Amino acid sequence: MSTIEFSKRQKKIMEIVQQSEPITSEKIASMLEVTRATLRPDLAILTMSGILDARPKVGYFYSGKSQFNLFSEEVKRIKVETMMSLPIVVTEETSVYDAIVTLFLEDVGTIFVASKGYLSGVISRKDFLKSAIGGTDMNKVPVGMVMTRRPNILTIGLKDSVLDAAIKILDHEVDSLPVVEREIVEGKEQLKIIGRISKSNVTKLFVELCKA
Amino acid sequence: MSTIEFSKRQKKIMEIVQQSEPITSEKIASMLEVTRATLRPDLAILTMSGILDARPKVGYFYSGKSQFNLFSEEVKRIKVETMMSLPIVVTEETSVYDAIVTLFLEDVGTIFVASKGYLSGVISRKDFLKSAIGGTDMNKVPVGMVMTRRPNILTIGLKDSVLDAAIKILDHEVDSLPVVEREIVEGKEQLKIIGRISKSNVTKLFVELCKA
Image 1 (cartoon, rainbow over the protein chains, first blue to last red):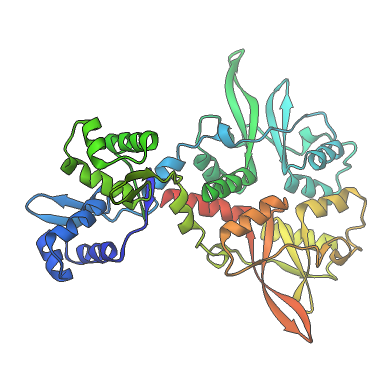
Image 2: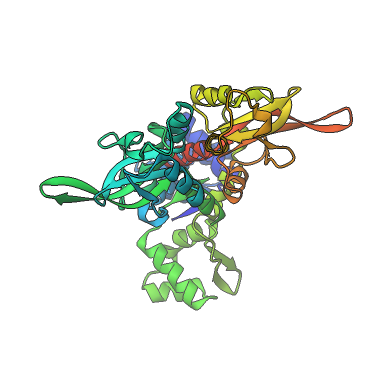
Protein backbone atom coordinates (compact mmCIF):
# COMPACT_ATOMS: atom_id res chain seq x y z
CA MET A 1 0.00 0.00 0.00
CA SER A 2 1.13 3.53 -0.66
CA THR A 3 -0.22 7.01 -1.02
CA ILE A 4 -0.39 9.40 -3.91
CA GLU A 5 -0.44 13.15 -4.11
CA PHE A 6 -2.73 13.97 -7.04
CA SER A 7 -1.80 16.51 -9.70
CA LYS A 8 -3.91 19.57 -10.47
CA ARG A 9 -5.23 17.93 -13.61
CA GLN A 10 -6.20 14.77 -11.75
CA LYS A 11 -8.10 16.84 -9.19
CA LYS A 12 -9.82 18.70 -12.03
CA ILE A 13 -10.83 15.35 -13.59
CA MET A 14 -12.31 14.22 -10.25
CA GLU A 15 -14.41 17.40 -10.14
CA ILE A 16 -15.62 16.99 -13.70
CA VAL A 17 -16.62 13.36 -13.18
CA GLN A 18 -18.29 14.20 -9.87
CA GLN A 19 -20.45 16.82 -11.60
CA SER A 20 -21.19 15.06 -14.88
CA GLU A 21 -21.07 11.30 -14.28
CA PRO A 22 -21.28 9.14 -16.30
CA ILE A 23 -18.89 10.89 -18.64
CA THR A 24 -16.66 9.54 -21.42
CA SER A 25 -12.93 10.18 -21.66
CA GLU A 26 -13.56 12.05 -24.95
CA LYS A 27 -15.76 14.55 -23.16
CA ILE A 28 -13.32 14.99 -20.29
CA ALA A 29 -10.51 15.50 -22.81
CA SER A 30 -12.45 18.16 -24.70
CA MET A 31 -13.39 19.98 -21.48
CA LEU A 32 -9.74 20.08 -20.46
CA GLU A 33 -8.57 20.82 -24.01
CA VAL A 34 -6.11 17.94 -24.11
CA THR A 35 -5.95 14.73 -26.13
CA ARG A 36 -7.34 11.42 -24.89
CA ALA A 37 -3.80 10.02 -24.97
CA THR A 38 -2.68 12.72 -22.53
CA LEU A 39 -5.47 11.79 -20.15
CA ARG A 40 -4.83 8.04 -20.23
CA PRO A 41 -2.27 7.86 -17.37
CA ASP A 42 -4.37 10.20 -15.21
CA LEU A 43 -7.48 8.09 -15.72
CA ALA A 44 -5.47 4.94 -14.99
CA ILE A 45 -4.25 6.38 -11.70
CA LEU A 46 -7.73 7.57 -10.70
CA THR A 47 -9.34 4.24 -11.57
CA MET A 48 -6.68 2.14 -9.86
CA SER A 49 -6.84 4.23 -6.73
CA GLY A 50 -10.57 3.61 -6.58
CA ILE A 51 -11.58 7.26 -6.95
CA LEU A 52 -13.24 6.62 -10.33
CA ASP A 53 -15.13 3.65 -11.63
CA ALA A 54 -14.99 2.95 -15.36
CA ARG A 55 -17.79 1.13 -17.18
CA PRO A 56 -17.15 0.13 -20.80
CA LYS A 57 -19.28 2.05 -23.33
CA VAL A 58 -20.81 4.16 -20.56
CA GLY A 59 -17.99 6.20 -19.11
CA TYR A 60 -16.49 7.18 -15.79
CA PHE A 61 -18.29 7.35 -12.45
CA TYR A 62 -17.18 8.96 -9.22
CA SER A 63 -16.94 6.30 -6.51
CA GLY A 64 -16.79 8.80 -3.67
CA LYS A 65 -14.22 6.79 -1.77
CA SER A 66 -12.68 8.63 1.11
CA GLN A 67 -9.03 9.49 1.00
CA PHE A 68 -8.14 7.49 4.10
CA ASN A 69 -10.21 4.51 3.10
CA LEU A 70 -7.47 2.09 2.21
CA PHE A 71 -5.06 3.50 4.76
CA SER A 72 -7.54 2.53 7.44
CA GLU A 73 -7.66 -1.04 6.13
CA GLU A 74 -3.97 -1.26 6.89
CA VAL A 75 -4.26 0.32 10.34
CA LYS A 76 -7.15 -1.96 11.29
CA ARG A 77 -4.73 -4.88 11.05
CA ILE A 78 -2.52 -3.52 13.87
CA LYS A 79 -3.30 -5.69 16.88
CA VAL A 80 -3.51 -4.91 20.58
CA GLU A 81 -0.65 -7.31 21.32
CA THR A 82 1.82 -5.18 19.34
CA MET A 83 1.04 -1.94 21.22
CA MET A 84 0.02 -2.97 24.76
CA SER A 85 1.91 -2.23 28.00
CA LEU A 86 2.49 -4.40 31.04
CA PRO A 87 -0.46 -4.65 33.42
CA ILE A 88 -0.09 -3.44 37.00
CA VAL A 89 -2.01 -5.79 39.26
CA VAL A 90 -2.83 -5.81 43.00
CA THR A 91 -4.97 -8.19 45.03
CA GLU A 92 -8.41 -7.33 46.42
CA GLU A 93 -7.00 -7.22 49.96
CA THR A 94 -4.52 -4.41 49.15
CA SER A 95 -5.41 -1.20 51.00
CA VAL A 96 -6.54 1.79 48.94
CA TYR A 97 -3.49 3.66 50.23
CA ASP A 98 -1.03 0.97 49.09
CA ALA A 99 -2.79 0.74 45.72
CA ILE A 100 -2.41 4.52 45.23
CA VAL A 101 1.28 4.23 46.10
CA THR A 102 1.59 1.49 43.47
CA LEU A 103 -0.20 3.74 40.98
CA PHE A 104 2.36 6.48 41.58
CA LEU A 105 5.39 4.21 41.61
CA GLU A 106 4.38 2.54 38.34
CA ASP A 107 3.07 5.82 36.93
CA VAL A 108 -0.09 4.34 35.46
CA GLY A 109 -3.63 5.67 35.35
CA THR A 110 -5.41 2.42 36.12
CA ILE A 111 -4.65 -0.62 38.27
CA PHE A 112 -6.15 -4.05 37.75
CA VAL A 113 -7.28 -6.15 40.68
CA ALA A 114 -6.93 -9.92 40.73
CA SER A 115 -8.53 -12.61 42.82
CA LYS A 116 -6.95 -16.09 42.68
CA GLY A 117 -4.86 -14.92 39.74
CA TYR A 118 -7.78 -13.80 37.58
CA LEU A 119 -9.21 -10.35 36.85
CA SER A 120 -11.83 -9.35 39.40
CA GLY A 121 -11.81 -5.55 39.19
CA VAL A 122 -10.38 -2.32 37.85
CA ILE A 123 -9.62 0.90 39.69
CA SER A 124 -8.62 4.23 38.10
CA ARG A 125 -7.21 7.55 39.34
CA LYS A 126 -10.75 8.88 39.15
CA ASP A 127 -12.06 6.08 41.42
CA PHE A 128 -9.24 6.67 43.91
CA LEU A 129 -9.90 10.40 43.93
CA LYS A 130 -13.60 9.77 44.52
CA SER A 131 -12.89 7.58 47.52
CA ALA A 132 -10.32 10.12 48.79
CA ILE A 133 -12.78 13.01 48.82
CA GLY A 134 -15.50 10.68 50.08
CA GLY A 135 -13.56 10.40 53.33
CA THR A 136 -12.61 6.74 52.95
CA ASP A 137 -10.05 5.59 55.51
CA MET A 138 -7.49 4.72 52.88
CA ASN A 139 -5.29 2.66 55.16
CA LYS A 140 -8.11 0.40 56.26
CA VAL A 141 -10.35 0.00 53.24
CA PRO A 142 -9.22 -2.67 50.73
CA VAL A 143 -9.39 -1.94 46.99
CA GLY A 144 -11.89 -4.76 46.66
CA MET A 145 -14.44 -2.43 48.26
CA VAL A 146 -13.98 0.55 45.95
CA MET A 147 -13.05 -1.01 42.60
CA THR A 148 -15.32 -1.52 39.61
CA ARG A 149 -16.11 -5.22 39.72
CA ARG A 150 -16.73 -7.83 37.02
CA PRO A 151 -18.93 -8.10 35.01
CA ASN A 152 -19.02 -4.28 34.84
CA ILE A 153 -15.56 -4.19 33.30
CA LEU A 154 -14.65 -3.71 29.67
CA THR A 155 -11.84 -5.90 28.36
CA ILE A 156 -10.09 -6.50 25.06
CA GLY A 157 -8.27 -9.46 23.51
CA LEU A 158 -4.69 -9.77 22.28
CA LYS A 159 -5.81 -10.31 18.70
CA ASP A 160 -8.33 -7.47 18.66
CA SER A 161 -7.31 -4.35 16.74
CA VAL A 162 -5.95 -1.23 18.40
CA LEU A 163 -8.77 0.56 16.58
CA ASP A 164 -11.39 -1.54 18.39
CA ALA A 165 -9.64 -0.84 21.69
CA ALA A 166 -9.64 2.91 20.92
CA ILE A 167 -13.35 2.86 20.09
CA LYS A 168 -14.17 1.01 23.35
CA ILE A 169 -12.06 3.47 25.34
CA LEU A 170 -13.80 6.49 23.81
CA ASP A 171 -17.34 5.10 23.88
CA HIS A 172 -17.14 4.15 27.55
CA GLU A 173 -14.96 7.08 28.66
CA VAL A 174 -12.27 5.02 30.32
CA ASP A 175 -8.51 5.58 30.21
CA SER A 176 -7.44 2.01 29.55
CA LEU A 177 -8.58 -1.57 29.09
CA PRO A 178 -7.21 -4.80 30.54
CA VAL A 179 -5.98 -7.12 27.80
CA VAL A 180 -7.22 -10.59 28.74
CA GLU A 181 -7.32 -14.20 27.68
CA ARG A 182 -10.42 -16.20 28.45
CA GLU A 183 -10.01 -19.50 30.32
CA ILE A 184 -12.60 -21.93 31.56
CA VAL A 185 -11.85 -22.89 35.17
CA GLU A 186 -14.21 -25.34 36.87
CA GLY A 187 -16.93 -24.50 34.36
CA LYS A 188 -16.61 -20.77 34.90
CA GLU A 189 -15.14 -18.22 32.51
CA GLN A 190 -12.09 -16.55 34.04
CA LEU A 191 -9.98 -13.73 32.60
CA LYS A 192 -6.21 -14.02 32.66
CA ILE A 193 -4.62 -10.54 32.73
CA ILE A 194 -2.08 -10.27 29.90
CA GLY A 195 -1.61 -6.54 29.37
CA ARG A 196 -2.97 -3.03 29.42
CA ILE A 197 -3.92 -0.78 26.52
CA SER A 198 -4.54 2.90 27.13
CA LYS A 199 -5.05 6.21 25.37
CA SER A 200 -1.27 6.61 25.71
CA ASN A 201 -0.68 3.50 23.60
CA VAL A 202 -3.10 4.76 20.95
CA THR A 203 -1.42 8.18 20.99
CA LYS A 204 1.94 6.44 20.60
CA LEU A 205 0.68 4.48 17.60
CA PHE A 206 -0.68 7.68 16.06
CA VAL A 207 2.73 9.35 16.41
CA GLU A 208 4.55 6.29 15.06
CA LEU A 209 2.32 6.14 11.98
CA CYS A 210 2.89 9.83 11.32
CA LYS A 211 6.64 9.61 11.80
CA ALA A 212 6.97 6.46 9.70
CA MET B 1 -4.32 12.39 -1.59
CA SER B 2 -5.47 8.82 -1.82
CA THR B 3 -4.24 5.35 -1.18
CA ILE B 4 -3.66 2.44 -3.47
CA GLU B 5 -3.60 -1.27 -2.92
CA PHE B 6 -0.90 -2.54 -5.26
CA SER B 7 -1.43 -5.52 -7.54
CA LYS B 8 0.71 -8.64 -7.38
CA ARG B 9 2.59 -7.55 -10.50
CA GLN B 10 3.28 -4.11 -9.07
CA LYS B 11 4.68 -5.69 -5.91
CA LYS B 12 6.83 -7.99 -8.04
CA ILE B 13 8.14 -4.96 -9.96
CA MET B 14 9.07 -3.26 -6.68
CA GLU B 15 11.05 -6.34 -5.64
CA ILE B 16 12.85 -6.54 -8.97
CA VAL B 17 13.84 -2.87 -8.91
CA GLN B 18 14.90 -3.09 -5.27
CA GLN B 19 17.24 -5.98 -6.11
CA SER B 20 18.59 -4.80 -9.47
CA GLU B 21 18.44 -1.00 -9.58
CA PRO B 22 19.03 0.77 -11.89
CA ILE B 23 17.04 -1.38 -14.25
CA THR B 24 15.36 -0.54 -17.57
CA SER B 25 11.73 -1.24 -18.34
CA GLU B 26 12.88 -3.66 -21.10
CA LYS B 27 14.68 -5.78 -18.52
CA ILE B 28 11.77 -5.73 -16.10
CA ALA B 29 9.43 -6.71 -18.96
CA SER B 30 11.62 -9.63 -19.99
CA MET B 31 11.95 -10.87 -16.38
CA LEU B 32 8.17 -10.82 -16.01
CA GLU B 33 7.63 -12.18 -19.53
CA VAL B 34 5.27 -9.40 -20.55
CA THR B 35 5.53 -6.60 -23.10
CA ARG B 36 6.74 -3.10 -22.23
CA ALA B 37 3.30 -1.77 -23.15
CA THR B 38 1.72 -4.03 -20.52
CA LEU B 39 4.08 -2.67 -17.89
CA ARG B 40 3.53 1.00 -18.73
CA PRO B 41 0.51 1.66 -16.44
CA ASP B 42 2.18 -0.25 -13.58
CA LEU B 43 5.35 1.77 -13.90
CA ALA B 44 3.32 4.99 -14.09
CA ILE B 45 1.53 4.14 -10.85
CA LEU B 46 4.75 3.18 -9.07
CA THR B 47 6.56 6.30 -10.22
CA MET B 48 3.71 8.66 -9.37
CA SER B 49 3.28 7.15 -5.95
CA GLY B 50 6.94 7.84 -5.25
CA ILE B 51 7.92 4.18 -4.82
CA LEU B 52 10.14 4.23 -7.91
CA ASP B 53 12.30 6.96 -9.37
CA ALA B 54 12.82 6.99 -13.13
CA ARG B 55 15.93 8.50 -14.74
CA PRO B 56 15.95 8.82 -18.56
CA LYS B 57 18.42 6.49 -20.28
CA VAL B 58 19.43 4.95 -16.93
CA GLY B 59 16.37 3.17 -15.68
CA TYR B 60 14.29 2.76 -12.54
CA PHE B 61 15.48 3.19 -8.95
CA TYR B 62 13.79 2.14 -5.73
CA SER B 63 13.15 5.22 -3.60
CA GLY B 64 12.52 3.22 -0.44
CA LYS B 65 9.72 5.51 0.69
CA SER B 66 7.74 4.21 3.61
CA GLN B 67 4.14 3.29 3.05
CA PHE B 68 2.80 5.86 5.49
CA ASN B 69 5.14 8.59 4.29
CA LEU B 70 2.73 10.66 2.30
CA PHE B 71 -0.20 9.84 4.54
CA SER B 72 1.68 11.44 7.39
CA GLU B 73 2.20 14.62 5.36
CA GLU B 74 -1.56 14.94 5.21
CA VAL B 75 -2.09 14.17 8.91
CA LYS B 76 0.58 16.68 9.92
CA ARG B 77 -1.63 19.39 8.46
CA ILE B 78 -4.46 18.66 10.93
CA LYS B 79 -4.32 21.50 13.41
CA VAL B 80 -4.97 21.60 17.16
CA GLU B 81 -7.86 24.06 16.63
CA THR B 82 -9.86 21.45 14.69
CA MET B 83 -9.64 18.76 17.41
CA MET B 84 -9.41 20.63 20.74
CA SER B 85 -12.01 20.64 23.53
CA LEU B 86 -13.23 23.46 25.75
CA PRO B 87 -10.88 24.34 28.61
CA ILE B 88 -12.11 24.01 32.20
CA VAL B 89 -10.70 26.89 34.21
CA VAL B 90 -10.76 27.84 37.92
CA THR B 91 -9.07 30.69 39.77
CA GLU B 92 -6.07 30.28 42.08
CA GLU B 93 -8.25 30.97 45.12
CA THR B 94 -10.56 27.99 44.45
CA SER B 95 -10.24 25.33 47.16
CA VAL B 96 -8.75 21.97 46.21
CA TYR B 97 -12.07 20.39 47.17
CA ASP B 98 -14.10 22.66 44.87
CA ALA B 99 -11.62 22.12 42.06
CA ILE B 100 -11.98 18.33 42.44
CA VAL B 101 -15.76 18.71 42.32
CA THR B 102 -15.38 20.74 39.09
CA LEU B 103 -13.12 18.02 37.71
CA PHE B 104 -15.84 15.42 38.33
CA LEU B 105 -18.73 17.56 37.13
CA GLU B 106 -16.94 18.44 33.90
CA ASP B 107 -15.45 14.95 33.63
CA VAL B 108 -11.99 16.11 32.62
CA GLY B 109 -8.55 14.88 33.66
CA THR B 110 -6.90 18.28 34.00
CA ILE B 111 -8.04 21.71 35.14
CA PHE B 112 -6.36 24.96 34.16
CA VAL B 113 -5.87 27.74 36.68
CA ALA B 114 -6.12 31.38 35.73
CA SER B 115 -4.96 34.54 37.43
CA LYS B 116 -6.36 37.85 36.11
CA GLY B 117 -7.74 35.97 33.13
CA TYR B 118 -4.45 34.42 32.03
CA LEU B 119 -3.00 30.94 32.50
CA SER B 120 -1.06 30.65 35.74
CA GLY B 121 -1.15 26.91 36.46
CA VAL B 122 -2.32 23.41 35.64
CA ILE B 123 -3.58 20.71 37.97
CA SER B 124 -4.29 17.08 37.05
CA ARG B 125 -6.04 14.11 38.67
CA LYS B 126 -2.59 12.87 39.63
CA ASP B 127 -1.76 16.15 41.42
CA PHE B 128 -5.09 16.10 43.25
CA LEU B 129 -4.56 12.50 44.31
CA LYS B 130 -1.08 13.36 45.56
CA SER B 131 -2.41 16.18 47.70
CA ALA B 132 -5.26 13.95 48.92
CA ILE B 133 -2.96 11.22 50.21
CA GLY B 134 -0.53 13.87 51.48
CA GLY B 135 -3.17 14.85 54.01
CA THR B 136 -3.90 18.31 52.57
CA ASP B 137 -6.95 19.97 54.13
CA MET B 138 -8.81 20.09 50.84
CA ASN B 139 -11.41 22.59 52.01
CA LYS B 140 -8.86 25.14 53.14
CA VAL B 141 -5.96 24.86 50.71
CA PRO B 142 -6.40 26.81 47.43
CA VAL B 143 -5.40 25.19 44.12
CA GLY B 144 -2.81 27.95 43.72
CA MET B 145 -0.76 26.13 46.38
CA VAL B 146 -0.78 22.67 44.80
CA MET B 147 -0.87 23.36 41.07
CA THR B 148 2.05 23.19 38.63
CA ARG B 149 2.90 26.84 38.03
CA ARG B 150 4.19 28.74 34.99
CA PRO B 151 6.82 28.57 33.56
CA ASN B 152 6.83 24.82 34.31
CA ILE B 153 3.81 24.27 32.08
CA LEU B 154 3.74 22.92 28.56
CA THR B 155 1.39 24.66 26.15
CA ILE B 156 0.46 24.40 22.49
CA GLY B 157 -0.86 26.87 19.90
CA LEU B 158 -4.06 26.78 17.86
CA LYS B 159 -2.13 26.48 14.59
CA ASP B 160 0.24 23.77 15.81
CA SER B 161 -0.41 20.27 14.53
CA VAL B 162 -2.21 17.59 16.53
CA LEU B 163 0.91 15.49 15.88
CA ASP B 164 3.11 18.04 17.69
CA ALA B 165 0.62 18.10 20.57
CA ALA B 166 0.70 14.27 20.73
CA ILE B 167 4.51 14.23 20.79
CA LYS B 168 4.61 16.81 23.61
CA ILE B 169 2.02 14.86 25.60
CA LEU B 170 3.99 11.61 25.26
CA ASP B 171 7.46 13.08 25.80
CA HIS B 172 6.46 14.86 29.00
CA GLU B 173 4.01 12.22 30.24
CA VAL B 174 1.06 14.55 30.70
CA ASP B 175 -2.59 13.88 29.89
CA SER B 176 -3.39 17.14 28.16
CA LEU B 177 -2.08 20.54 27.14
CA PRO B 178 -3.64 23.98 27.41
CA VAL B 179 -4.15 25.55 23.99
CA VAL B 180 -3.06 29.18 24.33
CA GLU B 181 -2.61 32.44 22.49
CA ARG B 182 0.30 34.68 23.45
CA GLU B 183 -0.45 38.30 24.33
CA ILE B 184 1.88 41.03 25.51
CA VAL B 185 0.34 42.81 28.51
CA GLU B 186 2.33 45.68 30.08
CA GLY B 187 5.51 44.35 28.53
CA LYS B 188 4.97 40.82 29.85
CA GLU B 189 4.01 37.72 27.89
CA GLN B 190 0.65 36.38 29.02
CA LEU B 191 -1.16 33.24 27.86
CA LYS B 192 -4.84 33.42 26.99
CA ILE B 193 -6.51 30.02 27.51
CA ILE B 194 -8.33 28.99 24.32
CA GLY B 195 -8.77 25.24 24.61
CA ARG B 196 -7.56 21.90 25.81
CA ILE B 197 -6.06 19.03 23.84
CA SER B 198 -5.68 15.62 25.43
CA LYS B 199 -4.87 12.00 24.68
CA SER B 200 -8.65 11.60 24.24
CA ASN B 201 -8.65 14.10 21.37
CA VAL B 202 -5.73 12.30 19.72
CA THR B 203 -7.48 8.95 20.20
CA LYS B 204 -10.62 10.46 18.66
CA LEU B 205 -8.65 11.68 15.63
CA PHE B 206 -7.08 8.24 15.25
CA VAL B 207 -10.51 6.61 15.21
CA GLU B 208 -11.90 9.21 12.80
CA LEU B 209 -9.03 8.68 10.36
CA CYS B 210 -9.55 4.93 10.50
CA LYS B 211 -13.30 5.15 10.04
CA ALA B 212 -13.09 7.72 7.24
